Amino acid sequence: MKTKLFAILLALLPVAAHASETAVHLDKAPVNIYDKLSLQRGARTFVNYCLNCHSANYMRYSRLQDLGLTEQQIADNLLFTAEKVGQPMNIAMHPADGKKWFGATPPDLTVVARSRDADWLYTYLRSFYRDSSRPTGWNNIVFPNVGMPHVLWELQGEQAAHFKTEKDHDGKEHEVFEKFETVKPGKMTKPEYDAMVGDLVNYLVYMGEPAQAQRKQLGIIVIFFLLGLTVLAYYLKKEFWKDVH
Image (cartoon, rainbow, N blue to C red; front, side):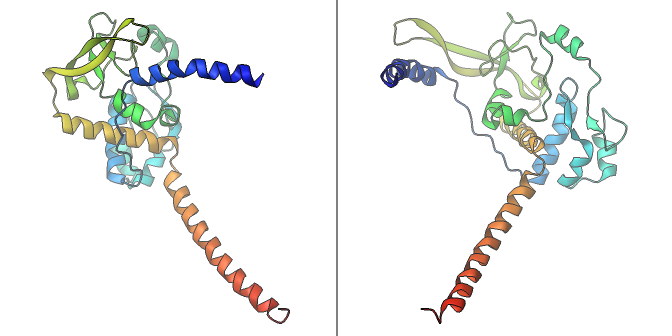
């Protein structure tokens, strides 16, 4: 049985290697959950551009106070889909309507950074391109044939994707992404747009576990406490056992 399993794994190695070679490169997301200004900017982008179709049912507006915002600031600038700061980030769109309009119900984004890696989200939000064959007019190299339109296109602008033909290990030809070309500039420069998406992804990571920063800080305190307790226990043991030895 073990021999057969080993043979199967060996047979799959070329397939796995080929998959890794043809996979889209993911750019590193500038995530820093301790940067509250970045998280505030990300929350603003999320509320203005994402919360129209995507809900965040497990996140309450009141948690934004942990980012240094006051209740009044949240109510005046970010409270678009609720009446009270203590309410969750729900949306008015019915799931059936979302499925009808986009082909699939837009998923809840509360824990999207935990189901999708932050690097994946960062690259995905910067990889939309014009594709007239798609119902929305947009496609994405990270998520081919995605049903979601490019809601940030006015900021990023329009770009075209160029592909080149390569042969795989079996000699079969297939298209591989080569580069993007800007067709129509947006309101932001590329560095500005990348920074905005970085802030948005940073907020999505924070939203997946708002207590993450406190948990890590508490963990460090506990580790130092245990180290101090270990030293104290060592000298206490020496004091108790000095007459025995």
